[in-house]
Length: 310
Image 1 (tube, rainbow, N blue to C red):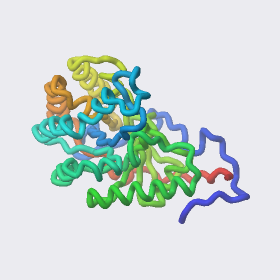
Image 2 (image 1 turned 180 degrees about the vertical axis):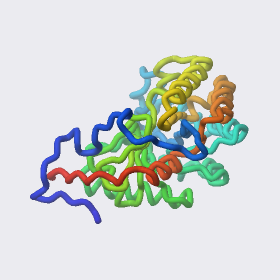
Image 3 (image 1 turned 135 degrees about the horizontal axis):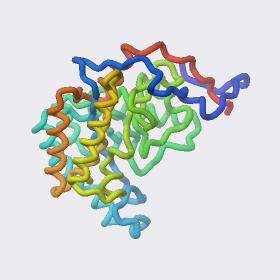
Image 4 (image 1 turned 90 degrees about the horizontal axis):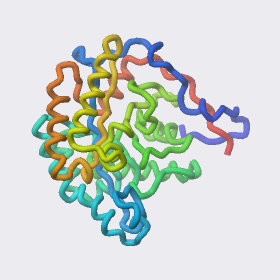
C-alpha cells in the first residue's frame, strides 16, 4: 500500500526513522553458505553523466565549464574503453558483478547490458543518471522518479532490480518505503556496517557498501598507487576474516570503469581479483545473494516507522 502522510502521524526523532542502533558484538551469529566467513561482492558502477552538468572530476578547475572536455571525457572513458578491460579481468577470474546501473546508462550503453545479461550479473538500480542527486523531492515526485527508474532498468536488462544505490548515495527519509512499494528489498546507501541489517521498513535491509574501499576515494581522492590498492584490499580481507571467526562479515569492493579501467591499473585489479577468488573462506557473490541469504536467517523485521507529517 502506498505510504501517505496523515494528520495523526506520530513524530519520530530523525535519527530513529530509518534503522536502530545495533552494536555488531551483540548480534546473533551470521553464517554464510558453505562455511564461508566473508561474503564479498564487486560493485561495478555503470553510470551516465550529463555533458552539461558538473560531476565527479579529476581536475576541479574546469568542472564548471559547459562543456568540460577534460572531466567529461575522463568519465566517458569508462563505457567506451575501461569497462571492456575490467570485463576481461572479471571473466578471467570467474567473478560476477553487481552492477550499480543508472537507468540512462542502460539505455545508452546496450553493449554493456548485453555483456552483463550474458554473464547473469545482478542489477542494482542506481538512479536515472549520476549528475542528478536524489534529494529534496516531494514524496509523490520521488515515487514517480523511482517507479520510472526501476521500470526502465527492468525493461533494458530483462530483470527487475532487487536493490538500490542512490546517485552519490543520496536518499530521502521516504526512499526505503517507496522502494519497498516497488518490490525492492535492500539499499546500499548507508555505509555504516560490515553486516546486513534490517531497516525500520518491513522487508527492507541495509547491505554494506563502501566509500573507502572504492576506487574513486582511493585513486582520485587519496592518490593511491596500484600496489596501494592491492595492499588495502588484502588488509581489509585479512581483518574481516579474523573478526569473522564467530560471525560472518561482508566485503564490498566499489569500482568505476573510468578509474579502475585505466590501462596502467589493469594488473592490480587482476591481483585483487585473484586474491579474492582464491581465498578458501570467501563467498564471492552478488549483493542480491547476500541480501537474500541474510533475509532468510534474520530476525523478524522491526516495526515500521511512521511517515513524518507533510
